[in-house]
Image (cartoon, rainbow, N blue to C red; front, side, top):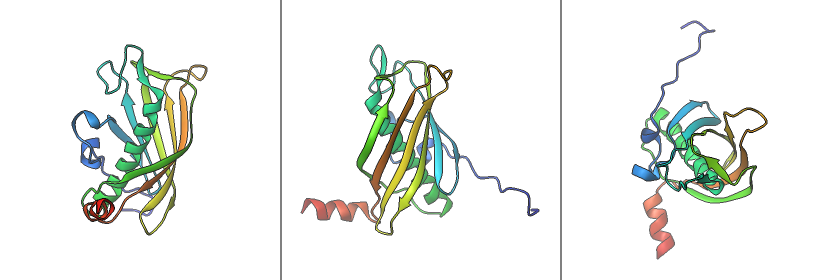
Length: 162
């Protein structure tokens, strides 16, 4: 490969990246990723989990963000030849959204960018959700999410419950 040619990164299906399954897997696909960020998409449908006749409540955006972070960790694991591990949403800071509901038929783009990753598994991500609507009607949701991914989730959970 020439020095100016970029290596083609593999595309993974969302089901390969997150430990969620069935209706709990909320994202549709990944769009792109690099060493510090991932972009994913979800189309809001009438059969989407949490959907009402108006759409999906905007508070579900935190879970969309968290699953995009899980997909980011999944890409890292795949590229390192490791198994997908579960992680935990520890908390969020300043979740804001300019709408109370994500309307049915809207495609949301979720971007997560790693701001901090500690050796003990704690991480901080800057997250943003936007829609593909015109700029006057664009949906924007933002938050910083704190996450934790232990080396051994089963051992961690065993210690937390004993």
